[in-house]
Length: 269
Image (cartoon, rainbow, N blue to C red):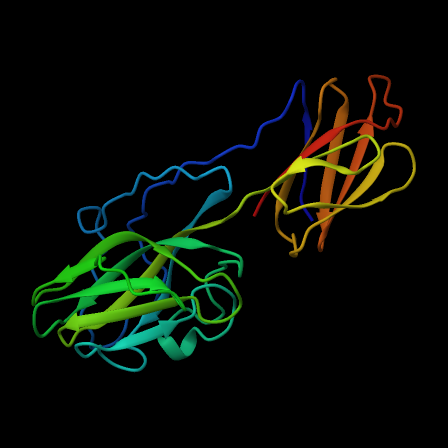
């Protein structure tokens, strides 16, 4: 349970967070008798993409989700494979970090580095959200030496497999490290009675108990998320905390007495 308190004045607007650059380290263990994958700043070019009003970028310590040297083996030319990226299951059989990398099931995209390791012939790799159409653009071009490229990869949100990867050329081993993810930004403004005033459809009214006390519901578990509460116009004291799918909100006036008033919530996960 995480709690953040803010004093707000004026109308509150949803915030966007810019993408941070890639880290140069990899969290995955080395593989015996396998060539190392380069993770240098020259190999992984930082991205500069600004999140939309609907999506929030969350950077993570680089974490491996795919390593064909550990499981399954090299990609042959024309072969397509599907992978888990979000959630907590299915990673060890694809050579990734057991238990996953902390990517929520609702993530719509990730930033990642893709490495071609020990390619036997020139080729290229394409990625796309599982269940979608294969794009014409490539995310990694390789020759006969190890090479790494940074990219933003769209996902199919959900608890199943999220990502499709297809290789042209090779054969080659492939390593995928995740460095951050995009998830839908959670926010909403509520009236003094607790009803939803505006938002992006991620929060709904649940109950309004005693004066100044509200409960708001989310369609997803907010455990580990940080919530910021603000009064909508006057600088009343607004505080909130998350528990499961619920946000508990409390408003007090200048004298510290509970008060019913409009409030705004922003949640970062």
